[in-house]
Length: 228
Image (tube, rainbow, N blue to C red; front, side, top):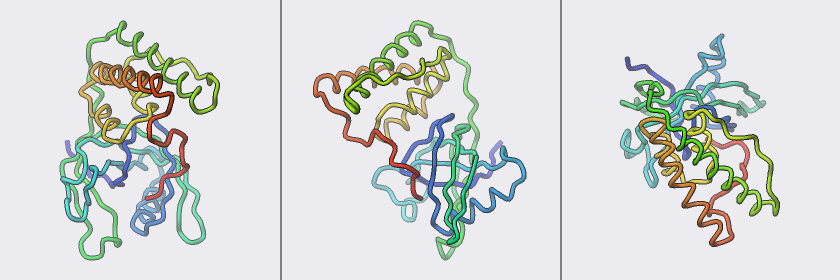
């Protein structure tokens, strides 16, 4: 059944389970945060993060300027400043498919965008233990190479999960990828399809880092809270 969801367009793809800090300064999104904070239950403080297609503008492209699959974020904490800005902490929660959007009429800063969405359950699929083991191994190699390139030494990481769905989302969230490629992983049909795509990307990225002895042309370290 379709649901109405406040939307926060962003040049990023949020992944379920990922912690995402945001800096909120536009009046319309400050209003959105105020409304969410007024809800008594934290689980109800949910809004949608949806990626903007490369080179598109929502004001002119409308729905077609946004990707089809987004992820809801649960507002976990907020610090409000005297001038009305917020620093917030969110956690990616569940995927959704965007059906339509309602753009503010008149002054575009007057209110925030809302969307009609279908929430997407994580579909059941065949388990693939050999694929999980292969991706865990490739992911470990990838992280070791990143540590060497960034800090000159291997960085110890917690072991990747054995659970197929959790591993697929962890790799999706952790790889250094352009938004479009992360979005493709996010939109994969199920965890098995996501792992197959992730395996191909891990092989490609590991090979490039090894061959070129350099990092991808993207910021690896978090730049801090993302502005709206």
